[in-house]
Image 1 (tube, helix red, strand yellow):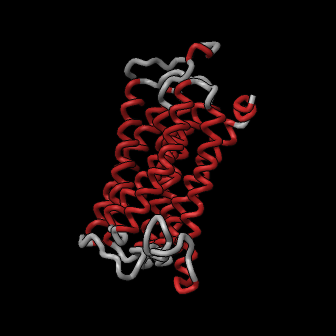
Image 2 (tube, rainbow, N blue to C red):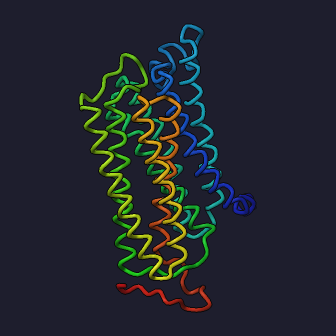
Length: 300
């Protein structure tokens, strides 16, 4: 049957889901960093009379319209992934559906962003929803291709929750910093009115906190002998260090567009990595494990 044929492509489609959702964050950042946020000044049409840009809108119209067209790629991949996951376990289907439903929700939210002339708080929400979808994509990929594992110790699990929660605080504060800074997406778009230097320092302190918590989690995973958690948290820690360094460089070089774009890519990767680090502490099909490990679900 048709669904059986699609099911063979579940893993590559889950990977594609993650890749295109990270990609839309990067292209959305390019729209804002090139000042093309209102290249198509209305939504769902590009102009009041046309769904496509005309020559008078110039390159900004082409950039914004191109980013809108990428949404259809996200839709296609998400729908194919749902079809591939339809005969899989219920959790897999649910995760695939959440991603698929998130794409049109993001499209509408993008329309609200344009309709409100790039209100920085709406732009912030728009980006955070993308980060959440990336997390769901990671959960879906973990579900369809990961090996069985036992739960980590309760201490490790609690610390992983703290790392994940603090990561989201950092992501949110990053959007607040951006909303108070110079890259608004359009010269006429308003800012939050907050002091960008002050918010940068607040954001930096949150970064210090998540780095400290990640180090603690890495030590706990090492002491418990949990290789799965140690590997996932190690990747997260490396990304955090790279992202922190990039943040400092862009701050002291007056926020060049290229570095800001790379920083947005880093934020998307960290969203996925923090989700992976938390998922690594959760059991999955433990009955399939041939031999027990020294890890238990009790406290360390």
